[in-house]
Image 1 (tube, rainbow, N blue to C red):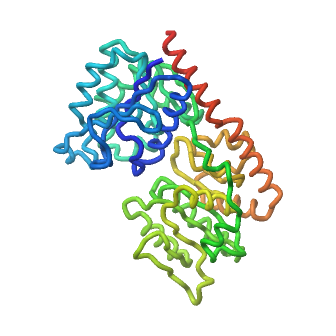
Image 2: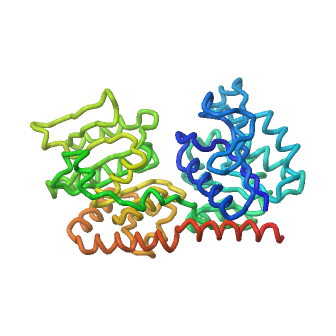
Length: 414
């Protein structure tokens, strides 16, 4: 099977979020299974870091990073990822592939791949990465709706299938948009090898001494509006008034200075924080250092990220919209209970597995869930064990890869 993956950005352009990792993990897994995968992407975010317009290999995956038209950057930071060279390559080479997997919606590579695939009778599948959720569509609605009706809808309707990563995403998006083609539900392939050797719990406390003797609530994700940090801060303020042994650890990359808004909410709630994630950051103490109950750690990767999971007592993600929730699965892989909103794409899987607590996007409900887990350590431990088992049963890379290959094969049989 020869598969062409078309995506606007690719490994190692990590600044463009989880799909950059997850798309690459899937392609690596497919190659190991004997699928011939070629990636057409752009050099956006990787200027002077990759060789443009030439074939290269990344972890065994064939990748071509096409240059983009810089003069279109007035459309946005990525210039719509318009690439004449990619267009020419698609026209010349599409006939050599059995199937095209298009990633994302709001960019030129996706539109070009869809229309050219249809013209050359090559079936394609679209992986949406949460772009079709009503919440996501409502963001910058003035820009998205015209483009959706002019371009994106035809891309979606022409697809042999739409790939969703969870039942929740499929249910909310497919019917919402009135799509009639196949809805394929396959989770992300997740590289869990970094969680094979979980560090000791105290490793995190050695790194952040302020956590010693305290129950640690962990938020690990991008620091932006849709992650529900306003809900988390209000909920933690309720918890902190009832228990003096709690600490909130916020781990993640600050997007567009949003952390300043979060800090304002903290101050408004009468709490104090320590910013260790930026050079110009620092502690905001009350009468003494013991008043600091929240730490901004900045972005942690690799071993430091695993330490954050392993050393925490509860993981929290109260997002307003989340198509999957990679960080939730990572937390489960470390055996800690999770609390997530019912807007996180895998909330049904979490509830069914009894791996955590699912709440509405409500501070009071979140505070009650945190208190319940803190006051019931046995229930908390059981949820952690259930989560670890669910990762092995539902999100094992081999199982997910098999499901994706079956989806491709079902399309080719039509």
